[in-house]
Length: 409
Ligand code: GLA
Image 1 (cartoon, rainbow, N blue to C red):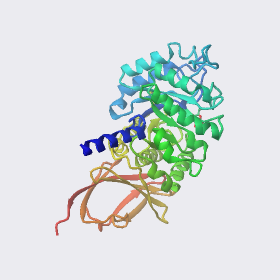
Image 2 (tube, protein in one colour):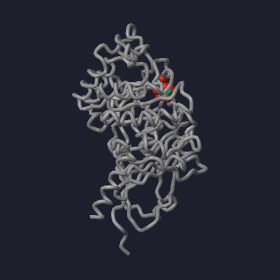
Image 3 (cartoon, rainbow, N blue to C red):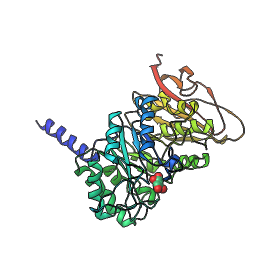
Image 4 (cartoon, helix red, strand yellow):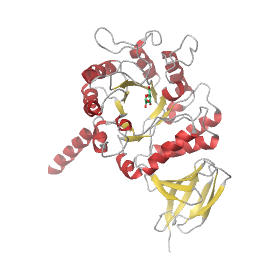
């Protein structure tokens, strides 16, 4: 009896702490912002403006091209979907020219394709791109509106709000979303507006109220930007790493793979780091015209498996060599792990020789390593075995490592 009571109490404590039980593994999908920004010119650019047509096109591609089956199931509209004014009842409304069928109809369509719909709002006087904001007095009403539209996820941005308003508004929206009775994933941009680090950011609180949170600056379509994000996460890993887990994730921002700014090696690096970091995988690209190479990177099953590992432990940097090679590590379920070898070099492929012992492995297991990109398998690795990986400039080698059997002496 006591045991039952303890279990029930533990269960409820768990549910309450997680608020909504969603996103036990990092969410995956697609978002408008990085690629399509605030393009509202449907007259001259009807295929690429923020509109229901774009969302329908992308939803169709997610289904037709195998993305949904791999887990990419959210379609998220970012800023610039709204009309410039709230309606007479004070509600947010979509731009009637660009979303003539309304958001509810869009959600119905997206759901009929086995996908989920995400939307954007901003806790402040206006959104970052100047559309109506969700001031504190509007939090409950907007949550209700999104629930009535059958929206599945909300990104709440923080432009044009003060620290005080954010401290009130982010928890208030969490409560308001829960009170709607609809399960709505909640992405909080709050930490990004507070420098991303304690003492200004209270990650224990964020874990209680948000499913994911943007920690840092906006990602752009360039390697410099992606590398800046990667470096910031590694430099602050002692603070950030323990905060991630099932239901609550650090968000280094969108995947820009498939756009214009990254080389093939850099694109592989972004995907590998996002897998290592247990990051939400929201692509922002044009799935109607994406190249085969970019698609293969984003659809790499082993990388997705690493990203979606049920333990949800975020990886971290374990080593920085003077040769400008870094090694990162992520523990995975069933005693597996991921190793990421990354080169900052800008000259030529580097032959990096090491052993698992040098990478902090202990014990007597024999390991099998799957190279996630080349698909080569290295068998029979003991912790003292020397091995060499060839890492291209700005590139990675990533291993999925499984212990095969303990060594019998
Ligand atoms: C902020 C956010 C971005 C995007 C834009 C929209 O900059 O960080 O991700 O949502 O606003 O205006």
